[in-house]
Length: 346
Image (cartoon, rainbow, N blue to C red; front, side):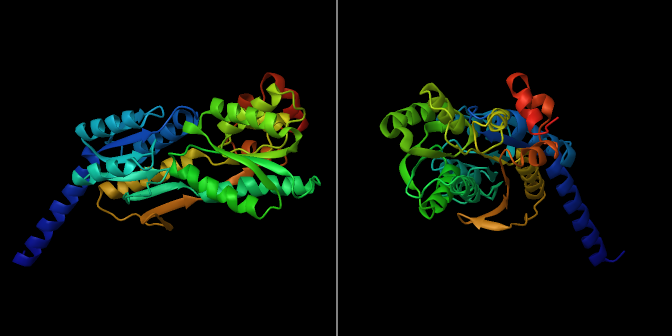
């Protein structure tokens, strides 16, 4: 074998060995923001874990949840780096504060994949999420179309319950809601940024607006199912029957039950496992020195954004049950059984 061939073979062997070692020895951390939404424990982490075990069986995985505490998330972030994480999938509690975490990671050659919530102030290595602005626009437009179909006069009033003010994804959802409502012909009576997405905070605020505006409220655009649940609870506590149409987002079991019962108008079906798997695929490409393809660029960060489906009582069977996202056994329990039967959900 000549000298050139020997050098080429040696280089190839080193590259292959390095790639194999990188994947085999890599520690990947998956840091989620809160427990107010059940999705992180029930869908995001299990989906990510399953995908990583398939794509990189030898990788070490670390999962932690910050429970809506930005300081705790920073401690967790520093801890996983100390434990040897070279890839961190981060769904930030505070999107602005997360820029400092990205800076820390990059100073130690650790890659950061922003997950679900973007990091506007400093580009991460990649961002995976559903299209949050599109979600906001879709849930609001769906509610507006319903009001018009029901003959609710333009000029009537709606409430807007946004997500956490420290969550950049909530800001994108709000922007999408604004676009739909601003051109709807309906008046936004008041809006609220819900601290930490906490349903009790949404409920308290909506209760105040019911006292303030009464039957002038013809609908509510709530940014997720937790704030929707708080909204509906406020109307029920005030004795409002029927509850005006309320939007949601996440397709939680509780929200699906409320839709089936006729108390919530819509939600968004966005199986978190889709984004979790995408994050796992990006993590493996990054650890192997590859450049993941991007479908979008958001905040100067290469991104992959997925388009979800709006769910109402009219299509809940097709979108949720026929697709196997949830089963009747999980959702159609107790008081919801008869309503499920009426919608042919079995």
